[in-house]
Image (cartoon, rainbow over all chains, first blue to last red; front, top):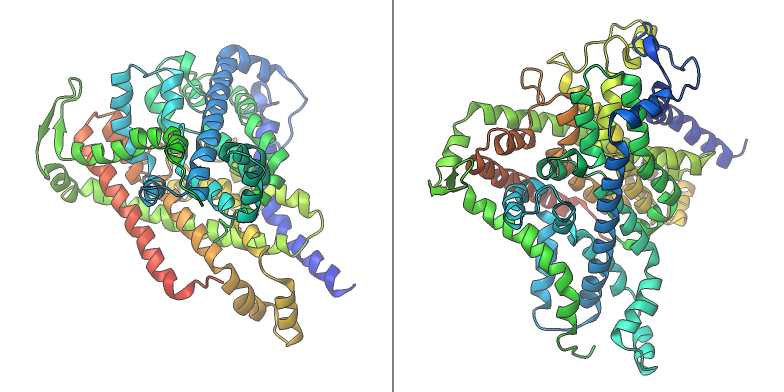
Length: 275
Length: 289
């Protein structure tokens, strides 16, 4: 065996155990979701279900308004992603490609917002929402997250790296600043825009503390909160049903990420955020 | 670049408006509230000066939460940085099925801490969970993970590391992509072994990434909430009662707004200090190429 293939074999061998540890809980979750009746709590526990019985999935959809939770999460995550991408692109472009008075201040403000943990803003934001009468509404779940300091910073790095000559050539052609942004800067930065979009979506989908604080009715709960409520309110419900519900609720982000992780990693690599 | 009039501010406004309204203003407002005692339902606030901070400083319960958070930091940040680095190095060595393996390691990143907790809560079940079954097959009697005061915090930490180290893998892979292969190859020809090559070639180039990943891991550890809320609710016997969890309870269960705001400010200062300390330590060790 050559040196290269020996190295590859070693690397593969080293990764086998961590890979198994990483995969096992997910496979076990899916396996559990097919276990019915006494199978769930059987001792000793078995790895595989007796049969591919889909009744837990049907029961989960009946017992909890899962479809509603999923809809809420989808509406909230899509809206936040769209808003964050648009506001970040515009702001990053202004900071990276334009000269204006107060730019340093605006930039410092953006960076400072990245340092404030969510717990610090939680209580006053709750009061703000109460004053706006936005508790338990989509607006309350979406609007506070319509901009992202991280997104602006990430895209700023990209826009800054676009050669000046390109912009000069474009303006000589009579393209306005905004046309340059839409037709040249954004397409050139697509890996970063997409990476940030995926990041924003996953973060929004997975929000926990904020929706826990500002939703009250089942009709407004997101998947994250709904599942926890579902479990604590139905002590008698089978674990198989809960695992089926969990499988349904994690599928959207897992599938999205599985499909896009290659571009995501490339976007991070090219962003210079690596250090 | 030519001056652009009002256009840059028009472009900035859609971002700056929500950032100011929902991050800058509430951060300052937290500071103000922390100096007040706020009535639970009317919301009427009475100025009490530093009273809330005095209460915090004298509270044995809060000191306990700080110890739990620190322990949790050691249990989660260190393993997720080290495992993340190890896995990224192995992935970078071009293993067989590298695409599949990479997907596998980064996948849990997309799962929320609440969902990950749901899945681990059952793995940890002392009789029906499979974790203790595996230990039993190895001849070890597994503990009652989430119910045993000694094991609850490590158990929450394991679930956290499982979910989070893939995030670090992504950044380490990005960092490793910038290590020129000619450099390690030259070191190898000079007779440097694998460890020497890692220590003297890869690590210096990777140090900015290592620094970034460590800072983010420390911040994340201090902010962990969803998994604790679902797995243990701060118990048993307060063994998983972290600073954030305590803050949440004081704010939204006990409605002690002023006291909780003081905790938020203290938490911010702790995170800021931890970040600043890491920056200081890094100054001498991180090489920016």
